Picture (cartoon, rainbow, N blue to C red):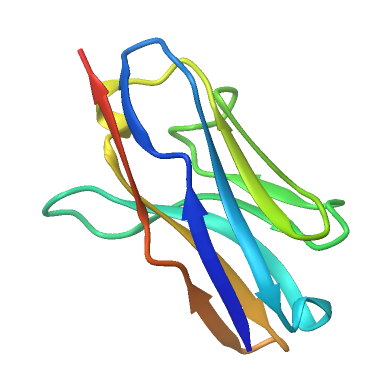
Length: 115
């Protein structure tokens, strides 16, 4: 099993930056890839970014390319968010795929961008 705990959300003005952290524990060696998703009120949960465990592969949602950067180290997953926009307001969830099939989610952290 894998446990995911997000932190770093908050309120920021448009144009500002935030860094989200996902602390990872459990069977980390069996995790295939990790990522961030977000869900705004009344909308579906959308992909923000994915990263392979070797960090050789990354993928970003179209709306965050060139503004957000995903990275990781042995125990944490990060999301650096720059040039934030009001439409980035959402609950951000950490995500992991374990042993090629089991999905794990964190509890989410709220990001609010004011105009």
